[in-house]
Length: 124
Picture 1 (cartoon, helix red, strand yellow):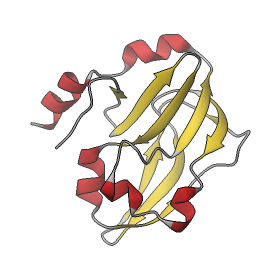
Picture 2: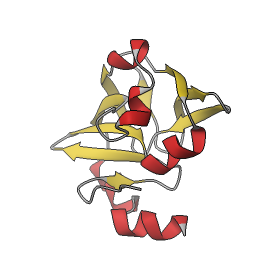
Picture 3: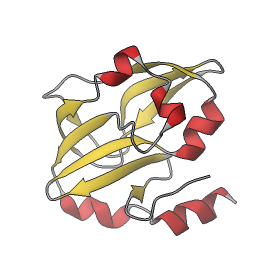
């Protein structure tokens, strides 16, 4: 499995790629592997607020449906519309297939996230 070092991870199997005051958020390689073939991604609307530790949508797969838990708090500024037509893109490239982009509300929340090595060690 792949866990890029430039990303931050949550224990809820989501990742964040922080760029200045925004973050792309998606699910980890481990999460997509556990879910199996992804069939549908439910996303919030642009302008919605997401809260660290709370669900911002659902990823449905051939096995089950799983809430996507936000690793950071903020306002949704963009959604990955490609996932409406190609939800399986998450299986193909879980780190390229981000789900939402947020404007980060509190950058200190980043300190609570895991590095790639810390996240990987939690999976062992």
